[in-house]
Structures are given as C-alpha cells and as structure tokens.
Image (cartoon, rainbow, N blue to C red; front, side):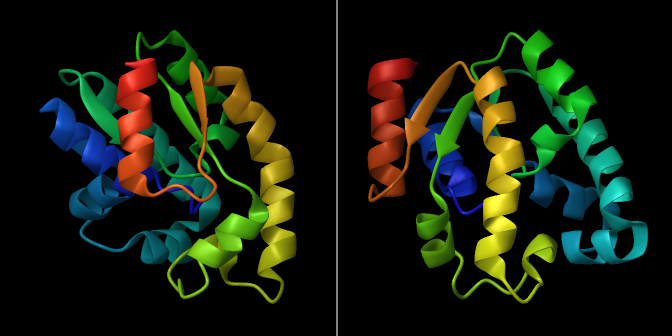
Length: 159
C-alpha cells in the first residue's frame, strides 16, 4: 500500500506499449461500486474472493502490466496463482515511513480507517513483506524515487 504500484504500472505499460490493469479499478468497473463499498458490504473476506477472481481473469488475457492491491498476497490461493503464472512479479518494496508520507492525505483505503495508521502499516508489513518476497521475481526498493525513475529502473534492469 502506497508503494506506487498503480502509478509505476501505468508508466511501465505506456513505455512498453502494453495494456495496464489495476485490480481495484477493474473490480470497481465490474461491480459498479467502489472498493470501499465492497469492503463495507462484503467485508475483507468477500473483497478478497472478488480480488482472486479478477487476478485469475486478468492473467488469462494477453500479457499486460497488472497492479495488484497491496493485500492480494494474504490469500494463499493468490500466492499459488502468482507462483504458477509465467509472469514477472515485481515487488515494489517500501518502508512504513514512506507509506505514511505517501498516504498522508488518503482517506479512501478501508484498511487504513483506524486511529493508528503507523501501527496498522507495521502490522501489515510484518505479514505481507515476507509473502511478497516469496513470490517476487524482482524486488525494487521505492524509497525516495519517483514513479518514472522506478519504471525506468525496472525496464533497464529487470525486463
């Protein structure tokens, strides 16, 4: 969350002449409601099921750049789907301090609607970081780099 997946993914897709899909945006188009409303009605469990379905659907399309939601990795089925895919999986690794800065004005993310955002991000990082590292074919540290610079680094060094 707040690593720049959507922004970097969009830039990568443009530079590489590929389609770009953001799973959250695709879910909103498909459902006709916001991710927040999906979370509110179906809770995280319902949202994660929809997220898994969308991931599977997008991976069946021609090669594209796909920005996953930050929590996609907490579902064991998604870990299997990602590991079995023939895709390059790029983990944009950021630290909690950078996340707090990047998300300081964000009021949309359901999992950050809490009193202590720093603690919530630390808890999520403790769970998610090792999972992302286990599936990533490449890890790119995002601290203090623009999205354009990250996209350039990814293309130059990893694709």
